[in-house]
Length: 397
Ligand SMILES: Cc1cc2nc3c(=O)[nH]c(=O)nc-3n(C[C@H](O)[C@H](O)[C@H](O)COP(=O)(O)O)c2cc1C
Ligand SMILES: [Fe+2]
Ligand SMILES: [Fe+2]
Image (cartoon, rainbow, N blue to C red; front, side):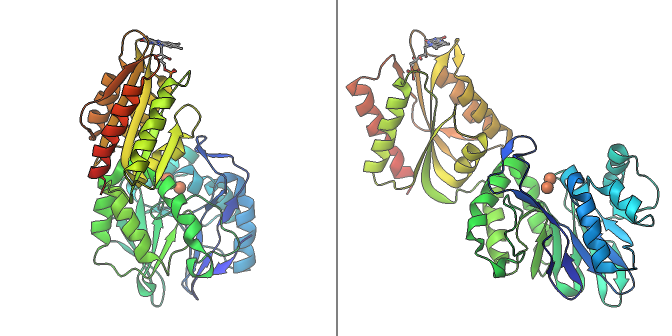
């Protein structure tokens, strides 16, 4: 088990999960994921902040026993009730019978609903404090919808350390080190974009509210529930979250999201890529909606300023994989993007109208007019597409 002393009082007692292939049964975990958990020893009282997923409960209990010896933890503070962080509650309770569960009113209701645990709880409100000993004060900041309604953050006042729950978290297990300054954390940054776009993406407005709330708070350390503990790159991850939650693109690249059954739409998508490249766009990500992971599609659209969607008509409707991706973007309220629409058919074109509607519904705009073709693209079709991309590339500068 990873163990790291974050400060004299705070230690890491989280776990890596390299066996679960998909987070929430959906999102790929090629590098695993960590469920971060922390022990805060205040001298008089000991708190566990955030828990682990149920399958790692016993492993965590062993670590807590090894660290505390004869002492018992007094509090389990639940910043976020989602079972990746609370699944082991009943195991913790059976190992440490006096463990008091600390959460806000919504959290405690969920704890009862999920685990039937309702005794020995302590309800906290926004701004409340809990003292663990001399000069060891925890303060609670309610930050609803980052990522569930009950989510809150816990601040260790004297150390300027915020336990942030899912905020500033990312996919990727921890490879030996826990603190960002003890590793090359650059590999986690794309995984933060993927995590944000997949998991938190719908709640940009709430992330903005949480960031406002933290504005006056000194933040030296961010102890998230997934991925590295941030100390060196605190400003970097806050800036990244600020951008992502305002739907601000991170670069001037373009995602070309396309569907094609027999290769004709794909040919037009290739022309779009050529047009963009010859207009000087360097960062172009082409994703086949039927084979790419939705996870990567979302991350790419959140990252790039440009988006081109191209799809055939299918049973008088939109080719389903592209529809699925556009609906996933709309669910996340994706905005601040102008989108090029390319549609095709064999006898009656329906795809471009449906794509345009989904784009507008999300809060994005359709760029210029959609290009619609029939059957195989002609030379003129490809030329028209390249010309449109030249105009589009101008808007990305
Ligand atoms: C199952 C299936 C359903 C289709 N439904 C329609 C349709 O309702 N209307 C239409 O005009 N074309 C329809 N098409 C034709 C596709 O739109 C056709 O594949 C496209 O025009 C050519 O692009 P592609 O080579 O990229 O697949 C259908 C094709 C398939 C395989
Ligand atoms: Fe969560
Ligand atoms: Fe989580």
